[in-house]
Every structure is written in C-alpha cells, then in structure tokens.
Image 1 (cartoon, one colour):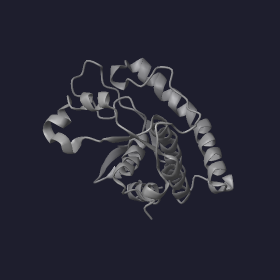
Image 2 (cartoon, one colour):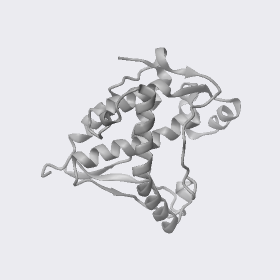
Image 3 (tube, one colour):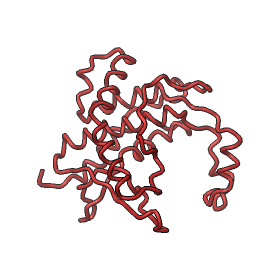
Length: 218
C-alpha cells in the first residue's frame, strides 16, 4: 500500500528524535586509515544502543508491544511503516539548488535531475539507525556475514564509492563476494518518498533480494 500522500508532512519543523553524531564527523573521503578505523569501531559500538532506542521509539509511536521488534525479517515491515509515517519532507532551499546546479550530474542531465523537495535532517539521520537494524536482521539470519570497511587514501583520485563506510560483507553474487552498505540502501528506499512510490514492504523486499545472496553453507 502506498502511504506517502496520506501520512507524510511537509513542514519546516523537524522530527523530535534523539540523535548521536560521530566525534570525527562524516567527511569520509578525507580520513586517514586511523580515523576510518576509529569511526568503524564507533559505529559498531553504537549499534546496540541505537537499535534499542529505535525499537523503543517505534513501539511508543505505533502503540505496539516492543517484542514485535525482534529483528526478524518480517519486523522490517513495522520499522518501515513507522518511518514512512514520521518522515518529513521539506523544500530544497535556493542556496542548495544553486550549489547542485554546479555539479557534474546537473551538467549531464539538466533540470530533470533537480529535487525541489528533500527529506529533513532528522529523517536522514534516522536512516542510519534503520540501517543498523536492517544489518542486525541480516547478521541474525546469516552469521557468516561480517562487518568491514574499505579505506582509500585521501590522495587517491578515484575512491571506492563507500570509502570508509561500514559494510556487511560475505554476500555472494555471480560467484563473487559482494558487500552491502545498509545506510545507503535504506536511503535509496527512503528517496522514493520524494516521488510518491514508497510502500511499507520496501525494506522487507530489500532484505528478500539480498537474502538470495547469502552463502549457501549457512
């Protein structure tokens, strides 16, 4: 069921949500190996408390028993239903639009690449917590998966797309090991809010797609 028009608010205000910021910031591509490793350790350490807070918040907002948020694949439907209901859409301000018009993407694609609306800051930050929850679902269903990160030197011209970002690795696609960056993948699903194509099953469907890439000997 598509719920965007029914539930999403367009406002200059943001969601009230307790957030945690990494002490080293998020300028990933500028980091040396030591900073990248510190961020990785910080991220992994944050998973229990961030997913706990997420579950508590979802339970209260939806008035459901927290036991339903048991890190099962089906619980992803509850998490995503909550997110689609609370996410806030805001207008992209003029300064951001002018900055975007200087990017290579705009030069290549033109006006059709512009988003005149955006998700609020806290709507974006919440995607990290949901990404952590999704990763925990994967790890509980497939213990052979592990956390990792790729580090490219700041001086390297062409860096890995997920340079210095924690990823789950161990998935198998066409005989090769591939990795999954959960925050990015949650963000891809969330971006569909901007064109009114989101469904409450999106996160679960994402899990289903990648679960087909589990190593066979689990």
